[in-house]
Image (cartoon, rainbow over the protein chains, first blue to last red):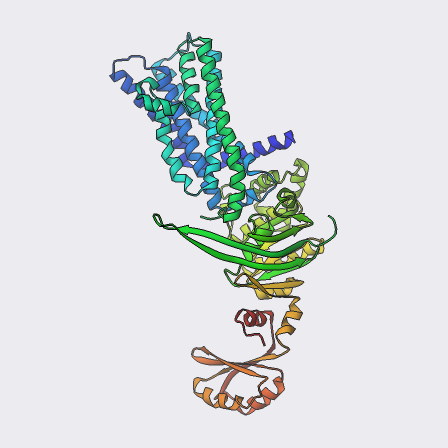
Length: 263
Length: 328
């Protein structure tokens, strides 16, 4: 059973990577976009008089922005492509639950997004001579894992939503920037108005990113960090639960409406 | 596998509801399949024929668990297709006509590998089955080529290989030869025959009557979502009539004379005239072809008759008669 799952995961990732390698849009999305965000952030920070731009909100933020954009667009693209090419119907008609395929696919997309982060980080190290001296590295690593987990859970929810509704695609595209703004990818959340900060509390990435900021700035306040990690993890689980609930609805609905192969 | 039928559909009904309009939402319902009942025996090749939009694909999709029926019951190899979906999916294979349903950027082998994982095949089985099936559908030499470089016929054949990966007991083939050249279509028909020889059950939909006549043990004809005929090809042909068909190609100018002459035929024969520029075609359906030939004998010269063919009714004649509602 476990062996079968890993074989499927490996094959699914293989399929996605092979499709992506030949797709210029994906390369732009994962490499160029975070580099542009990163460069703009650093130039703005320098223009504002900071010789060493903020590590989290300029470097990590641009990388995570790239990850998020990649996740949103690949979720939209994968489902749209499979529906358009008639593969979605064949996947649903197989004994493997669509939820499992979506889980692996979203995981691959999130992991592929790490390339963005690495690209942005590399640019910062080489161009701006960043160093991680003084950072709480284990805490930063855990925060990064929680960012990935949060993105995976949201990605799963989006993927199910897109199978469920053909109207989903423009809505999901529309989510890209608002979520980035609300999570404070490229600036501290405290600069946002109170009402926007209140809305952002339902996004797990926001908490994990705050924890990442704390840990990379050398923050070691356990109470604060544990609260942020717990919120990031708990809200991610809520998104995961929501996507599981939606999955059951999706399976029944697409079989009633016959929208699996509709273009 | 247990006993019983491979497919048992009872009073199958499917209604699609579509909504349109932004402010004032309008709901439109379309009955795609209306109370269809039929059974397919194990090891049988069953054909489902009908014009476009008759409900063939909707029926196949309900049988293959991709659509839920609005009402009615479906038993597939003894399992309930609505409630025991996963069991049914493990034991059926299906292809839908056209080139969609494969990853164009992947090779034929990688496409099959992916679907092998979706069907939970053990690595050793996958390794054995893929070359075996690629060989069966004549694509072994193109295994490493990207599918987007394949012709539609090759993609259709690869679809068949995909549908057979997990060695299913029951296979649904929805218009498998659509868009395939005659040689490719013949090869595919041979593959279908081979599958039947191996004891598989097949349900086939097609628009090609000769194909259905050649392959199918029994045929169901659907029209506007309803089952209008179900029998063996021979019995279907007999059910319309045992008449012969005489097609006569005539000059336009000689048509009135011949029509007047053919009016002497008794009520058991029927005459239809078709415009086939620059000539006219008279089709005579008759139980007594000899009598008609005697009647036409004086006109058998190029001034009147340019061509003449006497033939028995084909499945296509039966199909057209049923679909046009002119059952004799």
